[in-house]
Image (cartoon, rainbow, N blue to C red; front, side, top):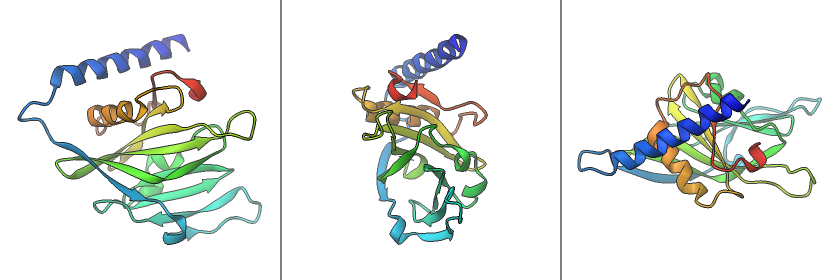
Length: 191
């Protein structure tokens, strides 16, 4: 476990060093963002809940720039994936270990106006069962490799939004989906 933590810490340092080194030169791509809303009542239900109550259903929601958003719920955990083959992308099988829900606001990271990553706030349950945490999850939008690439506990990391954007802007599109998502900053609930 320590070796894995060391590797992730090294990736964080390398990522932040790359950000500092590249700056914002005249030839750099322009990074912007856009927002859409995930409102399951306005989405198309793809699958209904099962009789046992272990699968809550799945919905296809409108996204940004032609990217569909697939939202599914199973065993009180959410799954979110993107694109025309969203159900077969790695993101369709990724969630947090704790029971969770998701926020309605979805941030799309754009490079020269084209979406390449998303940032979505998830609310995992805490041990006391009465409160929830707040985790930002960064997902890359590379077809065939749409997966979560990073997670930031927003309750213990000041600047969590910027940390998530920096990760998206530097790593999305090149992340190996066979590797678990990075945990950036203080782990908090992600420990």
